[in-house]
Image (tube, rainbow, N blue to C red; front, side, top):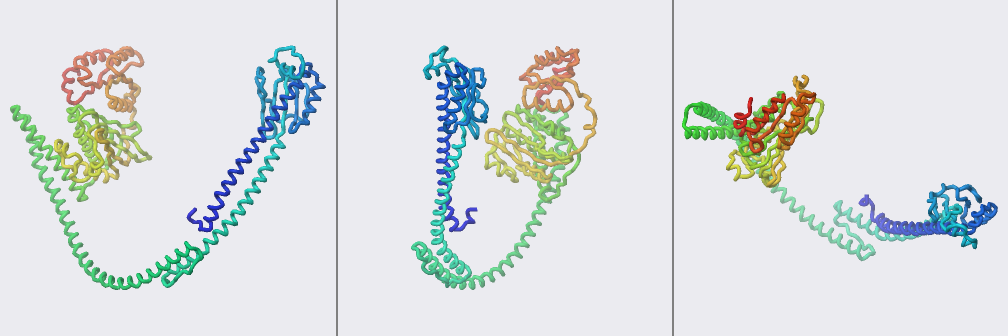
Length: 627
């Protein structure tokens, strides 16, 4: 807005705006000070009149002399601004009144106080003062009671009429002074702006002529030292432009001839580049087809090696031979995984990867992913669990095999680069419509984390963030690239948030159609039954509780096995009896023998037990816990 104002307007604004602001601020301040002083004087005069009336009316109030009180009230009306006067008895009965009815309500005052009270409005202020026995002394009367004893009340109301008139006069005077000053300042600013604006207008006209190509234009003296220097500079610039134009025209002619020759050379090079591009595309296509064919051909003998290795492991072999076969199987599995990644990458590069669109259960897909990778995680003492929030639709349509491939890759990487802690898959609902759901699936670990420079190269082909760790864990560096391409082909997005030393969170955002399941329409057979749950890990407890409550069960969580058994025993035989106990244990928390005894005790109470343990300890608990 300020940019659209000309120099003349700016001079007027810069002159009048500070002056107006200063005049308004100072005028308002002095008017406010005067009005405040008049108001304070009015209140002070009210206090003084009330305090003068108290000793005058004290003897009459003591003897309830209404005639004397009426005369005092009438004479008090002669005081400036006094509107009405009233004398009251100690019981607040009116003894005398002069003037019209009071406009304000009676002030609230404590019966034990001796101070004056007041209540103000826009038109008047009402004062209330207790008349004490001590006022008799001031009137020359002997006291017959204690000084703090009240003998009546004085009510006084002062009008604000004269004060308002004085304030309006001051306001009018200030406005006249401000307007007069602004008019004088505006006239001076207008004359000053003309002395600046006229020469600038001539400069503008001269520059416009120069812009239109009239380089012979020259500016005359403008009557000001600064503006004359500006005009002289513009004239010198015009002379330089005129000389440069002549030289530039000569150069343009020369460059035009050179450009014509270069264009002919560029056309020839473009034809050559087009042939080279077609050859490169054909070579890339042949490479992709060769890579896909070779990957497929190599997988066939590898599958044979793996099959016969499994058959050979079932035969009678020495421990050393079993170890050799185990090494062969692991190496073949690693090689097959690498070949599969190369094959998927080549299919994606060639644009021949086709996605399915079939119904699947999201919760089962996450559980299957974790079941495959659980032994590897439990060997490293890592906590591996999934958490599907209750409002998340579990029946969806899409390609479950490719989605499981992406999640397996993310969880497998998390296990590789996590030494201790937990790995959690979370599925949550971001947005939902009648037939589609926007999901966010994240894999959070407590591993080594990634630096900012590693994140930028993370989703590039054959690129690995930490070369030292990947040399130990293996891999081609294609897993995340394939995952990114698959998610993008599904219409989603994949990303990562990481902090070095604290862990990483890989997330997937997908918009998938909903699918109906017959299981959703069937009633829940377990609805209403009570389940006692024990799980030391907070995340695992939260995930397990969500799954049980989704089945319609009433879940009671316990912090230790003793309190769980006591609760089951106390509720046995009643309507609130527990039908089942879900126990999440490890060998560090509970010995197998102790668990065996507790399971028998729960079974005798009519409460069946379901025991969850790490896959690495399954054999230990399976041999001790009864079926």
